[in-house]
Image (cartoon, rainbow over all chains, first blue to last red; front, top):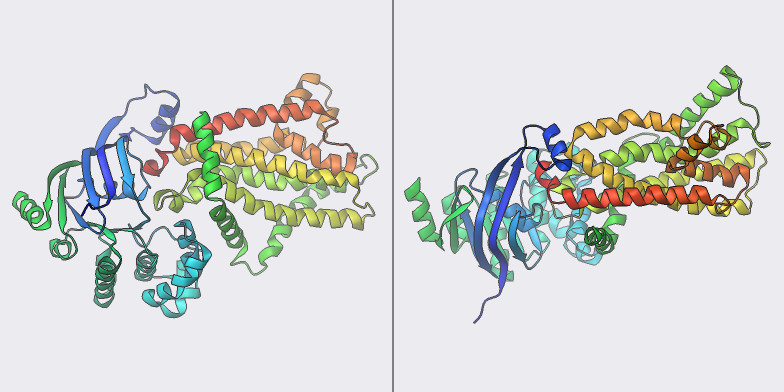
Length: 242
Length: 269
């Protein structure tokens, strides 16, 4: 059976312009001759992900993993090349961030779901589920500035996994919270992967977790793809290089 | 350029629901946490008005009636739009920075941030407008047909400052210097825009014309036309033409900035 491609990177390059200062950057807006250094976070990268697949990105810090995930989320744009993403992306990037600190937990749930393009009816349907999953009790009606970082992360995770995504992006997120919550998260991710054919993209330094969730792995170094294959091979390759 | 302009419009159409939601939450946020809450929308401007009234009528004793209206009412008619405009000159420049989490943490069209911020301030403006009309009534000046043009000036104000906020917001997101520049100039704009005097009474013709290219002047004057002068907005075509020219220039500038910076802003912030 022909599998559906949900994410496709075609020769994608992401170059960050590093100016000497903010002033130089501002000048650079008007004058293209202002010098800057080029930093290639992702360099001529191509890969495809099929629906329902779990893909892990392995690599050291600065290998370009987060940049790739950001580009899939739509937060960053590629300098060159094409990215094709099909489906609703829910990202667990920096769980504690992206909230409005002055609004209550409940309001943030609605706002975030709204921004993800959900209709009011859809939100009504999942709201209780999110509240139950986050399990932060009375605090749900309090402004977010009174939350601990763990509570914010729990709320963030609860929204992301309960908003019926097609593509779930997990960036070290499963390492937040206490052991019980971590277990709950892991189970939840496993459950939605099994039930609803969700595509999972995973970035972690914990190789055993990666093995748990993913079938495929890509090893990156300095923005380039060194290896692509089954997760076991990728882990073996990665460990050998270490 | 045209494509970027089209993109901005498309982003607004596809995010129209989210824009309204965000405007609402921006509004709620503005006044929450304060015991007096919504009253601040009125108290802040009233304090400013009182200070000006005191300085001119009591201190300088220059506050003679204008066109048969007490100086105080003449002042309010021009200050009313200024409260919105001053918020948006500085707030517009800061808007993208203030909503950083929408830019760097999720997929969200940056071009719509200025729009919802302006919409939320428009609500505050409506409250002030109601207070102003009530004040005029309490002085015995009742609404007449000239009040009908207020929505037109409100729209002109909204459109111009949304465009301004996009332009200034993008540049400020890139460089804090630009934001400081805007803040530094905001009080200059106040004194140069004919809010405390009638621009049409300036003796030098070229200065008078130059000032009309400033939308702040045109809009403040427009509110006075409705409240005090009892003129129609189409009577002074020169003024309208100047407004449109400036608006067009800023649309070009904002589109250019969006084209250049749309993809770079998330990386920089």
